[in-house]
Amino acid sequence: MISIIICSANAEELSEVSKNIDETIGVAYEIIGIDNSNGKRGICAVYNEGKQRAKFDILCFMHEDIEIKTQNWGTILLGIFSENKEIGVVGVAGGGYKALAPSGWYCVEYDSPDRSFQNVIQGYKLNDKDEIHAYHNPYQQQLSEVVCADGMWLAARKDILDEKPFDEKLLKGFHGYDVDFCLNIFGKHKIVVTYDILMKHSSEGNFGREWLESILKLHRKWNAHFPLTVTNDVDEKLIYRTEKLAIKNVIEQMLEWKFSFGEIQRMLISGAKSKRMPLRLFFKGYVHLVEQHFGLGDK
Image (cartoon, rainbow, N blue to C red; front, side, top):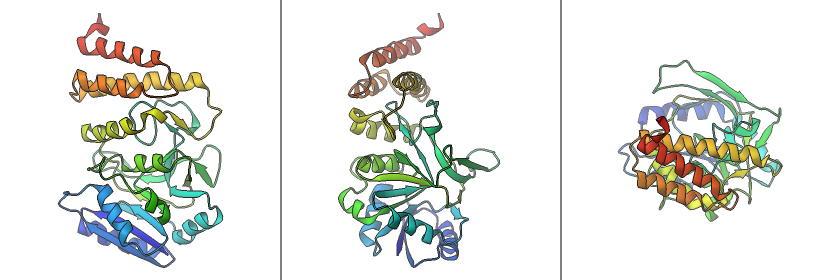
């Protein structure tokens, strides 16, 4: 009753996660593990193929470096979908604010409890850190509505994918697919985080230049709609302060990663398409770019 779709880069990890799923899911399932070990296909194309091959109505897209800790999690997941027909996507981590400043599913500069909602054991491969239990449920809910959910584990109704597949034409790599997918359905179906399914994710992700290049692509697609919040009663002054700080930080990061002046300028011009943010935000961003690029801010 659940089709699990995995873009596999490592046969051993696929075998391990398949065993874990079998021991914990508690309902009828199928695993569609698609070999992409050569990395020649983007994750959007792989996931769309998996959806075409799936025989069940609930799809679960997940990374293979995951160990699910919760027994009978399939029963929990099916219950979430059956009890609320408005829910289209379920994740285990997500953000209640999608910034206009280029970012992933949460914005670190957003000083609000809605910054993130999650219940995940986070491991580390790229950094020498001990794993942590990242639990953030500020309103003590069973389900928290979000704008975007983390793609490490996403479940969705199959009919949504029929109408809104992953954008494999725009995103040909392995980043940004989760944000873009959620934005495609935000406002049409509810996107929620559940705290009742716990899993360990063994890697923290690689948020480098390649990641940001994908984020910039999806922002050019969606900037007119940003920023987005799950509620309408957010202080506009908080949003402006958040975006001003976030844009400055993005500019500095892009300069560090050797993006050209023109590429950063294009980011700012694209952001000016926002129907919500005043033009003075982008003027301040441009001044910051000039100061940082030419070293004027140090004088």
